[in-house]
Picture 1 (cartoon, one colour):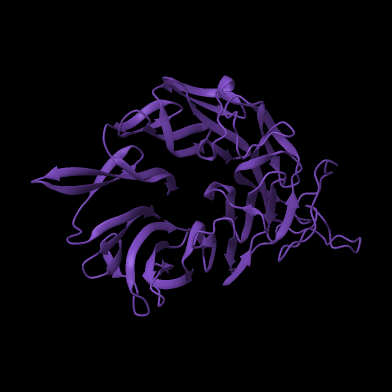
Picture 2 (cartoon, rainbow, N blue to C red):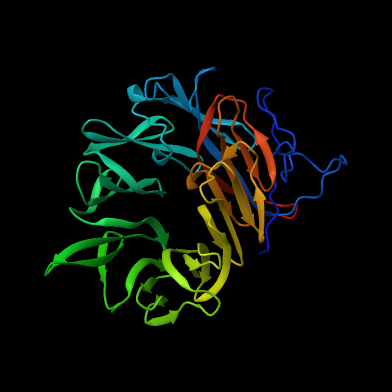
Length: 411
């Protein structure tokens, strides 16, 4: 994949925050460091990717790993950019309607959005300022900011079903159903999918629905195959199915149906469907010669890549002709690896990626926000192989990025 050059913005870094020495395969340099020859190359017009991330900061000496005072301890959420410039800071905890759970914090467009459930309401804040409040306690299965509006896909904490909202106002809802894929954009429209399990003549029958801008459409006609996942791509519905009886998997795009290549593998099961701007990617499990399973990825119907035996994936990203993943072998979650360019690079000892939301892969670049697995160590982040340390007592909650256009000399 042809990667763009990442130009890191030059800024003065606080003395309290510094880059650490190189460990293992990671090159450790300050963000914005030059080539060392004192000369800058003439700038050319290009897009710049600038990563940002949210952290929970606790009082010095507080053991946030045990977090015995969860919700009541004096805590703040701080957003930094990759130059470690502070962008936002606000209070967190029960008294502020702000949680520090990773699935309730997200970085979008240079802001930190949080959701919180009180005894009877859902509260959404941006950078600590309340922007939405509505009746009902919901967990977020999808969250997108678009054109100044906040679109959410909420799942009831007290019952079943889902509700699709814009700025808190209901656009569509269902009292039943399990979300299969959260909110995503395709061709300017908002999409998600869900399924309903019904009992018909003492057997469970599953019905699948794709929702576009609040309008649902039922998916039918799969025969003996089970629908694993589905996703709209360039206006066409892609459906991943699996036949457990024959071990065959299929990817359908509109009326075109293709069997996934299994000439070199035996498919055990299928997991999910993802996509980039060009094609859909199916992810599943194939038999390993040692008796276990391996994660395999198909690009369209073509077998694209296979990860190592018993490698459990935390985050996976396929873009054009490249694949990246973070995971671990067996049950050793504290010894993690970055898979990139067909290499397994061990993450720094004593650190781990705690959630998919703490990893960002975009346009050939990546940012991994890693938390320590034991007390007394600061969190670190890695951008394109360079490792930096954040000198706070706390942990990462999520990561995001902004893309800026930088005009060149001729612009």
